[in-house]
Length: 119
Image 1 (spheres, rainbow, N blue to C red):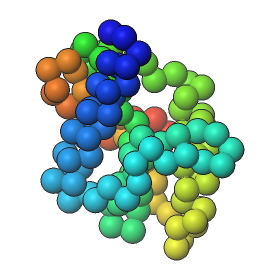
Image 2 (image 1 turned 45 degrees about the vertical axis):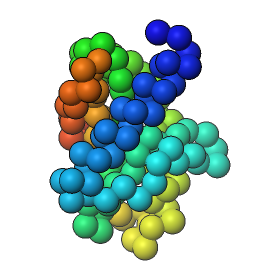
Image 3 (image 1 turned 120 degrees about the horizontal axis):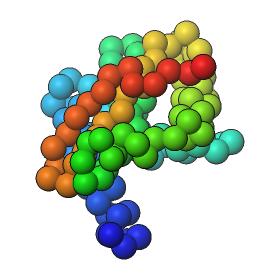
């Protein structure tokens, strides 16, 4: 898959996942949120007063997509999430969950709640 096709496939996967979360009652409050110190969060959803940080991975299969989440990337996501919730009403006490949303080539979505937590 070319770089452009991969990029657009990723955007389409993010849109599908966002719709799935919204339909489940978790409104999306940010897309492709970038922290000041690096790190990007694909989607951020609201769960009551809490926040769900969602990393979306798209590949031929769910297993391949899951393999694409590296420890270094998880560290960057955690740092960005800490920055994001610092601006929330409850600051660092905000309930926070890290989900991994896997999208295969057929558009099937697998959500892994609490897929990775900070060390």
